[in-house]
Image (cartoon, rainbow, N blue to C red; front, top):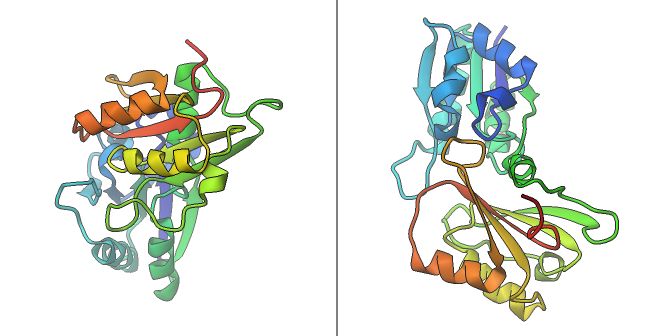
Length: 240
């Protein structure tokens, strides 16, 4: 029976893998993996497994989505035990839907194994909760870019400028200066605490706290391909 396991690898620390994720990696004949899911995580694969890199990174040549979906279908139809290894939690800004749709259209079964998303890992590393009953009553995730790499249109700026929410921006380093300008126009203070979390859970992890306006200046002055997310709201200035 043709079947694919979508395995969420978490933010990169192999110790954050779930037991089920490790089990599927050990049983896989072929693993299609994202860039951020490589390294130590792939040590759980069998020595004879076929490892295929299909990750997408901003500013670098990357496989087209239809090519990735076709690889999944072709390997599954060949009767192989297929794992699609996706970074973070596969259901959060991971383009999971396109690949699931391709499998459904091909009549191929699948399972989705959830994982630790980088927002949770960043908050844990910073020693803060993502929510608090009185001051951070809501949690919201948003992507910082669309399919073209630009700031998405149609953002709910009133919601994103809510001072009582913890907001996490995924893949937003390049576009956050533009986003912050719109947030301030919607009423968010330039003094809002922010946390820039780079290479979350990796050996070179870096957590930097600063006010919103200072973060905008920092991101505007430097170019870096290091994966990062931005957390802002009432809890961002707390912790270790």
